[in-house]
Length: 226
Image 1 (cartoon, one colour):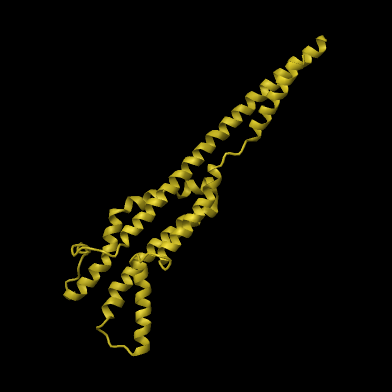
Image 2 (tube, rainbow, N blue to C red):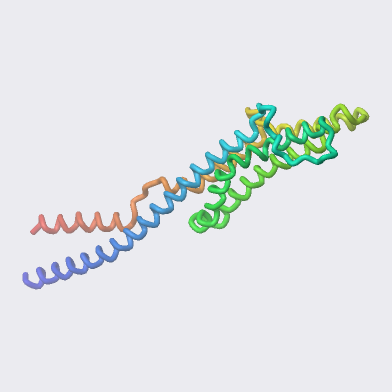
């Protein structure tokens, strides 16, 4: 009987030591998991802000004072200046929201370290989408709008001109609905971001919790048997 009690005490000591060691490991995993959750929440929140900022930049409604901070060429004609100013509106609006884009981009390397190198595409694609707005603004203000109604074109050339101009205008201005190319790309990015971060918000039982709970039940059952 004494041997049984001694063995039971030994098992209890070993189990207690294992629980302490495992508990430290579990605490470390919990701490790291919490930091990963916080990073995931921050990335999602910042991306929502970026999406709203892009919507603000692409708002088709503008005032006559927007775009006027552009540095003008002394040789510009008034009509040319007006079109160039219109394209410059996106630059002025971006400057007002620049911190939003900076806050999101600064998360890239921390996010990659926690969620893998492939997650870099989320940040790269966001930059591509933003840059495409500036590219379309430049093409419209320096080429398509300048030619519209001012340069003679044959029917086939004019149709190509209209098609390209409308495509760039669909990027430059937010049209809404399913036909909005920029919003569709942003939704694709968001879907991937949500997919990568989704495991952070799940609560699976860790092996430590399962084993310690099982040991606790077994120990309690052993005491009742005695």
